[in-house]
Amino acid sequence: GTATIADSTISGNYTYKGSSNGGGIWNYGNLTLSNSTISSNYGDLGSGIFTSGTLSLYHCTISDNTGGDAIYNHGNVEITIGHTIAADYFNVLQYGISKGYNLFEQGSIYGAIASDIFGGNADLQSLADNGGPTLTHALGINSYAFDAGDPSAVAGSGSISDSDQRGAGYTRTLDTIDIGAVEMTNRPPDAISDGFTTDENTGFTTGDVLSNDTDPDTTD
Image (cartoon, rainbow, N blue to C red):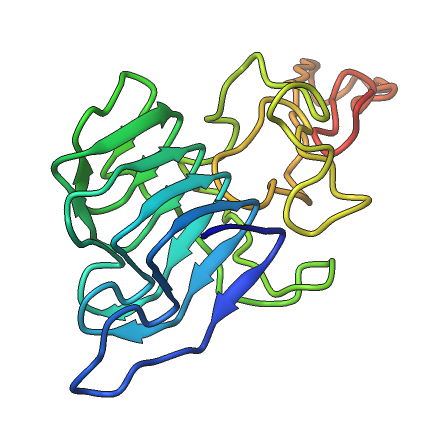
């Protein structure tokens, strides 16, 4: 069959020894995940996802799954990945299709393209309530996923949703779209250096030194 999972977190699941495949998801059909998080699951084969059917991942975050590879490709099926953070190890050597703008902390994918990032620090924060109805991994300030998505992406246009995994009020593109399930918020301002010189006997007024700084969390 065919299934789509969107705006969801699949976490805290595990499989027992003897049939310990697919800690988070066991896919036999045609599965698409978008704006979703696969985190903190356990399984010997496919700690996050065990798939023997077609799998597509768009704007997803995969992290903190333990046991075997986070995604286990059983039967050399087609796996398509785009704008996704893979912080766990997995190795899609064959039948992987990169749609670009992925961040692989560990592992690799066959058919990677120039916009994919390998070995970069995702700097994911712990799974927590970052707004919206589901728990998510916020991006830390040092994340390679920040502003690393498709620079032409516009929220609500084409395949880009209006919001990230958290839903209404959390726009998908604050500036350049981020990689993963959620956009970075509460970012530091873009500060422009203001220089003044004087001597110890001469006073001066600085004026508004913040007027030329910008807040990346707004659309102004």
